[in-house]
Length: 285
Image 1 (cartoon, one colour):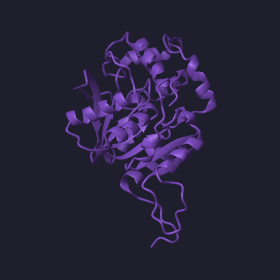
Image 2 (image 1 turned 60 degrees about the vertical axis):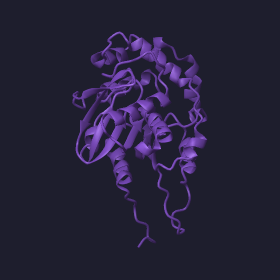
Image 3 (image 1 turned 45 degrees about the vertical axis):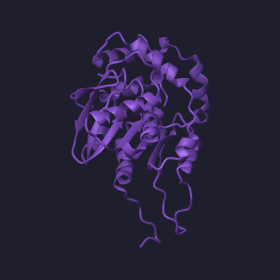
Image 4 (image 1 turned 90 degrees about the vertical axis):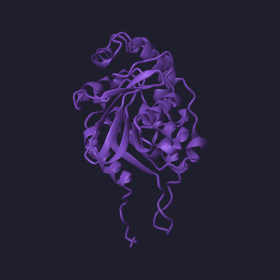
C-alpha cells in the first residue's frame, strides 16, 4: 500500500488506458464518480491511493470481457469530490457499500489494489453480505507486515514530497477542485498513521479472498503467507481435505508499483478464482 512519489511513473504510464466516461452518484455528502463496462456478474474495482480509474490501466477492460465492472473513484480522487472528513479504510468501505445501495447492487465480487485492497478488506469485514469474493492485490492487514524500509519512511512523509510534482499535475486533469491536491495529500499521509491491526477480523472472515502480492511488494512475503493462513490456507492439498476457499498468488520479479501493470498474470489468477476453478491434481477424479 505504498503511497509515495515513486508511484507517479505508474500513474502516467497507464493514464490513457481507459476511456474517461461515466457518471456520479451522491454518497455520504460526496459525488462519487464511477464507470460501468462489460457484461456478466458484477465486479467492483477499487484503485490505489493518488490513483483513479484510468491509472488502473488495462486490467479493467480485460476484466470487463467477462464481468460487469463497476470501477469507482474514492473520496477526493479522480472525479469524485472531497469532503471535510478524514480518509480512513472504514470510511472508504462504507462509501463503497453506500454506492452499491445507490445503484441497486446487492452483492458483488470486489477487486482492490493497494489502498483499494485494504478498503475492500474492510468492506468484507464491515459489510460481508455485500461481498461475494474479494481479490486483494498488495494488501496489508497489520502494520507489522510492512517492509522495514517503508515503515521507516512513514514518519518522514510530508506534503512537500507530493505538492508541486507531476503527481499534482496528473491530479488536476480530472479533479473537480483543481486546488484540492494538498488537502488530499495531507489526508493520505494521515492514513499511513492510522492503526492497522485486523488479524482477528481477517481470521473471522467467511468471504473467500485471493491475496495477490509481488515478491518485492510493500508488504513482506511472510505477511502475505500469514494472512493466507488466517484465511485457512497453507495446508497440503493432496491429503483428502478440500482446498480452502481463499488463495495466494505471488507475482515474480514484481515491486509494488509493478503489480497493477501485469495484466496477463493478474487475469490468469483472478479469473479462475472468480469462476471457482481450481487446477486438478493427480489424485483428483
